[in-house]
Length: 574
Image 1 (spheres, helix red, strand yellow):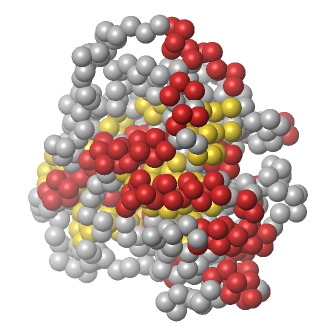
Image 2: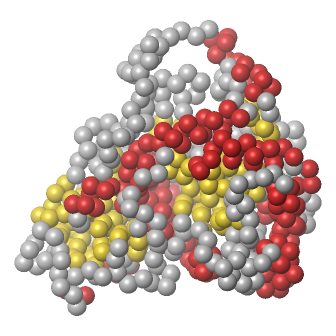
């Protein structure tokens, strides 16, 4: 988290998901062994992830507040929406969370995937959008008496599968009386034609979606072979096709003056795929997704984090409650967050544009990042899986001049950082020459010397030739200020050596009784069978190396206007 904050300024974390609708706040002395959170197998679980029941104490919220203060993190928190007619505990959670988290509380999520409530047995099988809205209103009534300081802090609906978000918008057109009941008086000119609960709802702050490219839930015996599915993650078209489904919704939410958040995504629902979710292809895919959804005006994209047997985790703690110095595992998609954070920078004014580069080539997409109307960074992808050099290409970047009709402001030199791996199927990812180690080999700090390559530009041709190897991603800094703003600062949090634990790998100097360890808070072997899983079953097949099979691409031209014109669907202000 500190790595991301040092590059992008802040971090947003969501605490919730499937478990929130079976979670309850209890007193700290109600959890055995002075624990903060406890999970128990849910009797008759009907969800593919076999989500456990969860009880937690207010210490969880205190921990979140402390983490937030340390790394400038802010939080979304999911409220229990299982029975809106009797949610006194959810109201207590809301009051306690607001009191402890204060300004670090971004919002409360009401209902996680309510479009699946019927099929998962949490409501009757005919549960509809109208039913959800009525339940939402019941919760609003309950929370109205909770004396919350911020009424515009609710979020919903967080749909994934069966309800089309435009249908939710259009519900206001066909049922204005329902809109009036739920939204009250339209706010700031927002009319009943946009009734999606965050566009106009007085009590709502944002609109959220849950989006996955594919699933690994094995529902009704429907199993996706990872080796056959691997190609779905190679190329820009996979991302643009996914994003295109939400352009209209994004425009409607933007017109309502509300943020549009991709609350949950990752490579595949139900924990991802072995050989895909932990590969460099996933790194490139996640980075491309982040830029593309920014391009269509999504405000945030949140990557889902699961349990120990989840393949797509950005990072996974050691499998016991004793955190060794180098016992963490950093996942492939985590590297994409570093790239995206540096590309967006800390200004809060980043505007992301898809360049449709190289004639909109599927394997060599690119993006430009503008601040205050001026280009400051460029991102160049090469999805081709060929380490021989035959499919490396050179992008010639110019600012103004050429066909733009403007005076050239191309700099005399630019700086470049590269995201690289030996192949798309490789786990050995580096960002600017640095790595976070292998499985069970990380402490969250980048190892090695950061590499920033300086490229001299052709002052006669007014272009900068940027080599992009296959496969890799290049982040080009067009200005010194752009580089400085995105570079990690001196406040990156270090680890904290203690008298019990040294700061060297595999040098734990404290001894713990194994019997105590097995029953303590954390994932001990004694309670392994009681834990629910975010991925039903597991697979151990090794990743297969895939070839993209594209012809050689030698060069492409990227011309950037010195003045940025806002596109109707193409400007994203972070």
